[in-house]
Amino acid sequence: MDFGMSGDDLEQMYQEVILEASRNPHGRERFAPDLASEQSAQAGESVVRASHEYCAAGESHQFNPTCGDEATIHAEVSDGGDGRPHTIERLVWDGHGCSISQASLSIMVDLVEGKTVDEAMRLAGLFHQLMDSRGAGLSDESAEEDLGDAVVFQGVSKYPMRIKCALLGWEGMKASVAEALARMQ
Image (cartoon, rainbow, N blue to C red; front, side, top):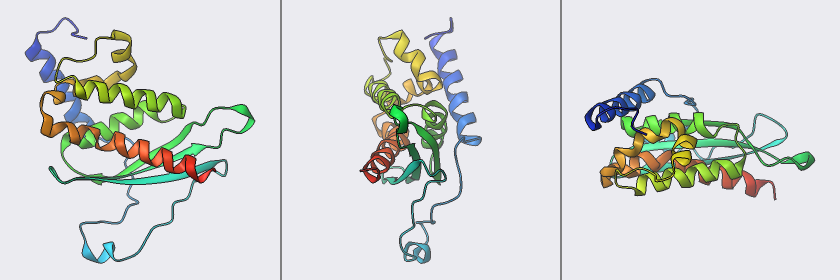
């Protein structure tokens, strides 16, 4: 997608979207212990609960040692009763890091919350493909449309050291959803 803009204009627009998403993150809640604090790290394990009785919850803590990004992602997945597919009913996160990681988490929440698990995993796969593109983007225009605002990370994919920042939340979402599904067994 080029929106009829030059490469520089498009890059600037992408940067503005990333900065805005990091300044006003969606899905961010304060629930994880401050792992930077030695005192809270010794406090013990937290209990993972779903806020809906028909859901199972899972959490995943992700850390990027290269940048210092850190996030705990909490997912609540419906049990798939009545023949309905498992759906991500609630997706929240807590953490800190660079603008890329924070924006990616925010945009990911907007993109996958309320989607079926299968659809969320498909979107995660598309986002991985985008990150593997080294700035070229996806060749499938409908796949780019499916990613919505997440396509702004196409420019990030040019910088291997920043790809981990963008993928942090997506990896956490996949792991927390997998944990929630395992709790249903």
